Image (cartoon, rainbow, N blue to C red; front, side, top):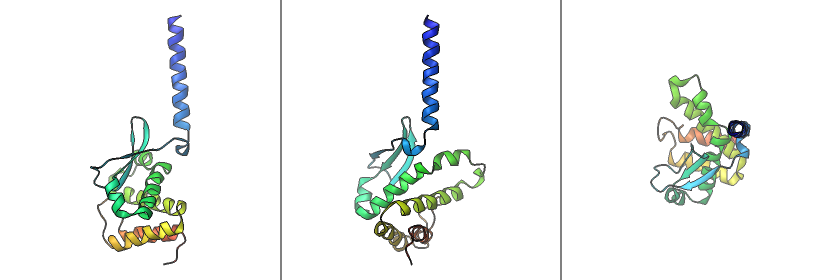
Length: 158
């Protein structure tokens, strides 16, 4: 009898895991938590409970409500587009920085399509004005590259 309960418990747990893994990311709740010591405005990642976005409220406050809304949509895009999983599965691990720059542009494009056009325009202008030809690190495109993608994806004329 004891074996039977353990057997069914394991089977039910396995079935639930299969359901969760097979569930599209959009159906899974993405939790958001403030993290005041974060050096960036926000990051999309996973913890032991699933997808999560950590954000620095102080940095977002300085960016203003429009840019903050775009940043939030951008981080959600990383989860929706499954960038963390795709990076792990990528066979092109020789240039992770290049792959991450591609993912950043994909997340920008996705976010630009999801937010209002004036929000996308504000984000594009912010990237052009604050970063221009520079990139903040090797994993991010230049500000001008990001602005161009945002404008293109949100159909904003230059």
